[in-house]
Amino acid sequence: MCPAPASSATFPAKFLTAAFYKFVELPDYQARKPALLAFCEAHHVKGMILLAQEGINSTIAGAPDDVHAVLAYLRSDPLLADLQHKESWSDKAPFYRMKVRLKKEIVTLNVPGISPTHMAGTYVKPADWNALISDPDVVVVDTRNDYEVEIGTFKGAVDPRIKSFSELPEWVAHYGPLHAGADPQKKPKVAMFCTGGIRCEKSTAYMRAQGYEEVYHLEGGILKYLETVPPENSLWQGECFVFDERVSVGHGLVPGHHGLCRACRQPLEDGATDSPLFEAGVSCPRCHAHTSETQKNSARERQRQWELAKERAQVHIGATLPKPIPHDADKAQPRSG
Image (cartoon, rainbow, N blue to C red):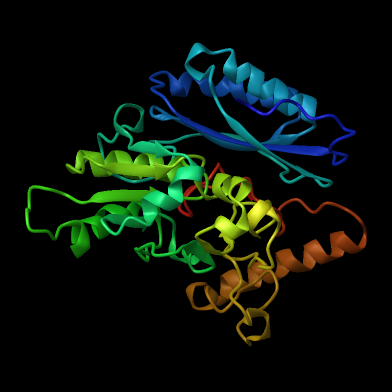
């Protein structure tokens, strides 16, 4: 069931953020863009919506009534009638632009013919997840990027150490335990998880296409697990990276302690701000070597303008602002700045 609109008495924050996705065949996805963008703009909603033939993926924010108007508009389409969303609140506008982008995939795997709509794995509710991943015959795979896994994962999970979701198929092809066994025709049970569910759905569909029959994924992702499973019963270790200004969360979805590099949009490692390679808004030890001096100088100017705007209590569009990131999106997905 989708969350009901919350009253201002319950949530005094002014801005509602809604994150949602759905794998569904949208053959006319290109034609949907103009009306959807116009509707969002008419309601002063900001953020990003990705549309592809395989579905929709989005994070948007605005006044509660306006955000719920956009959700109602989407659900008025029979194909999206059961669209689920997750809500969070803030005192400041999380995003400053509205974009609707057309994509080949709503989360990029770069493998043609993979359809989560028809062949995703079996959902496992958070309450049942511990029993599944404690089974020694199950290969538990974290489908997220390496910088996400670095700050937290499930006990016993395999880290593919991928830089982007599109690298997962190559890893699957070469990871021995997924192929070893007395009977080469019998593939092992596989359990996969991600932040909110979208990568899990696509990765389990890929595994089934590769002949894995017993493939499972965590319903609602890590976030639903942390929200519903008490710490004393948890097999989660560390914190969970999230694609918003909280950076990371723990049990009960309480914001974690990790900071964010405004240049590469990845969590700061412990001690990163003490490194000579760290410069606020410009670089951190993780990304310093991957940008040119020209890029760093451009980032310095953006940071300077942002600091000036902050002193004047103004919003500086184009500086190091929060970026609208589709729900549980892979690092490689486009983001507006």
